Length: 126
Length: 478
Image (cartoon, rainbow over all chains, first blue to last red; front, side, top):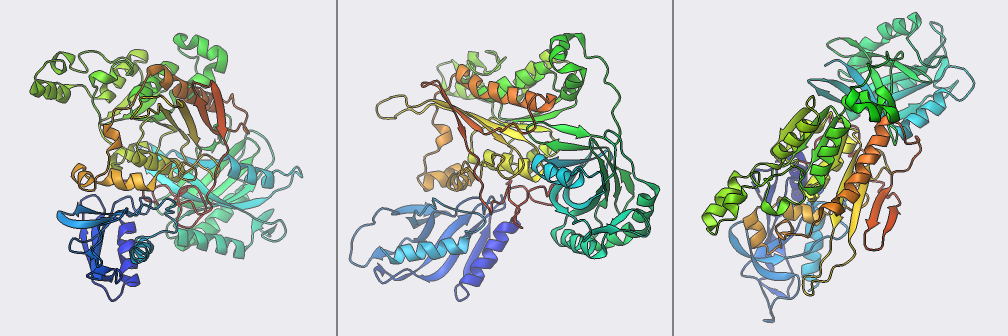
């Protein structure tokens, strides 16, 4: 893994100390990352899920998106997925795709950890 | 350390240093430069990152062993900074005179007293001293392996200038075929071109034009980078390409497997470009690289280039090109043409060509500061084809875009003429080289004011910025 990707993973572990962080390095300096047991909000059933994403070798210049969560997650009220959420595939598994592109991504400031926090905030606000 | 050793400094930093050293009082003044370093088989470049001016009477004071010297605290602060930032340290002072300069015996004695300890403090440096006259510079560079003189200094701005310890001998008369060139920029200008190493990233419609013109101008060394092969649809735009290069006799067959075979056997674009260049200039040194600039081993072929043209339009290639420009202090230019077409109605929008200079200082046209390197496209382009399909992204590169040779000429012609003016010294030193956009249908040319992000990881002085770090920074390659 590239040093910037390793740093990002270290920051994630520090930002989510009570959660298991699963890392699978890829062949191009990046990694697939899964953070387990995250609270996504009571409007979902179940209200917790793993959230996964890819850090590419050109991180932090590259944005971190999309994110993915367990394919079994549904809105508790039975509604279908809204814009930004869709059924997709990631790392060979079916998953719910969370498409939150950062229009103002700044590689000097934004990190995989801050992006995950923003994605969780967005999920909880839906 | 490989010899020759040269020093590269950007025009804004040089202006700052020059005004401090030569304020018009005829006296001696001092400063410290910090620098990154790049070593190749052909020599070493020291890349100036910071200029620290020593205040007269405070940091630069009368000395018992010479005329003046930097005080110990100033040297300690700056050498400590170099050690923590992994940079090289160079003490600077000035002498009188114009075109010739050398260290005095007192200067050399002070180096011998102080520099062994300074090498230890800076973890091996290199460290050393530079002495400036108004149009000359000499250097005494110390490393753990030995001591080297400075060959020359290159100032990178709209005019690329080289200073030496003493005037260079007159060049030999240019080859008679360049007679009309020499009448414009002299034998000196022709020799400058013959000593340049120029990179071209992308040898498609735009890059192939640049390649032909540089070869005809007499540029001595071209490094051409492209992974692609000639296709039948490229032929109207790729200079010098033939039906055989595109394997048209196979590609035009009605059988898909024969067409695939033809595409597989088609010539790589860089080899077509090499053939064109060799026809124009049999003496040219030509490196045809089949590969992607995103691959670090390929990008490293350009770290000692004098100029880079970017004629490939992916976010990844823009990122690596921009990083090369700032990390290794190599000026360059990105060229492109956009023909927007409404996919539903087929209506043609505002056609524009872009010529975007990227010079290695803040405000020099950094593509990142101008928000021309899309972080989201970087993420998408780094995914495999399968991953992109899974994530339902449109692969923009696979949608054929309209392209016409004469539109490519607008962007590339401007870029190559600017390159020529820079190296033969026909731009004024303060000539602004803003990004230039030509709206073709409106016959309108617009300049884009420079944009600067204070924390840019390419061009700023932010501690994480790789500007002028050379081999001591890492390129954003895969």
